[in-house]
Amino acid sequence: MDIIWGTPAQEHLPWAGMIALYLFLAGIAGGGFLTASLTDLLAKNKPSRLIKAGSLIAPSAIVLGLGLLVLDLSKPFAFWKLLIHVSTKSVMSIGTFIISAFVTIAFVYALMVWGDFLKSKTGILAKVGELAGKFSALRKPVALLGAVLALCTTTYTGFLLSAVSTNPLWSVPFLGLGVVPFLAVLFLISGVSTGLAATLIGAAKEEGLGLYKKADSVLIVLEIILLVMLYLSVNPVYFSGTMSSLFWIGVVMVGLLLPLVLSIYGMMKHRHWVMPVYGSVIVGGLCLRYFIVFSGQMF
Image (cartoon, rainbow, N blue to C red; front, side, top):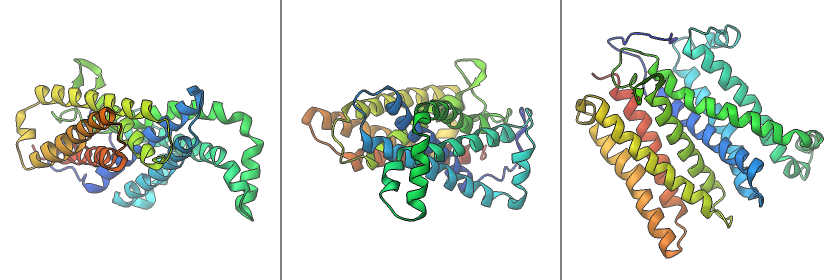
């Protein structure tokens, strides 16, 4: 199914769990890449484990998400047509172009980051590491370009749903600005938060990550504010129907309030609860995608 700007809502949109997982994994990929690349570009004391974790999460998550998306298509072998036919009227076509570029850059950046590790291996891995080392001077430009594409990828997941213009939940404008879909902003903040959380789990044994943990707490607060705004902007039936438990328990309690409380308490007591805090953030991000995708098709 292709999505054209302004597509009216159908009686039954064939979007199920695979689509929710794809949107979730695309957000994780974008957030993980942003964490790694911005650290690489801006940090004075570069935490190597954090950069390595984020650079590995990005291509892994986006490829897995694309695989699920292709499997969900009614004609999966026709997916290649989106790669060669770019239409400015098709949200999915534009998104395919952005994500294809992001996948390429994410893999290139990962090879650059992991180049020294690959050199220590034998056979083809060592040769790949040596090849990556020859282009090490391009690491920062690649990180910068990838950061832009990561932002576009994470934001696109919200644009994809909001293009269904007659769906009251999906097409809410942000602060009344018709050109800025609310879901694009919400999914951007949530994607960066979940991607950062996954990266922190991957770099759990590294010291000096207090700033990143505080940043994720800020993102959680922003997400709470955005969800309050969304609640006040649409019919309350979306939050009291069959998907209400997933929202109030999965998104709000598990995904936002629990990690926020644990994070603040942990910072006060100098405790480092990585898995409980950031695992909850990731679970909440997944629940949010499921809630938005399924609730938007029920009313």
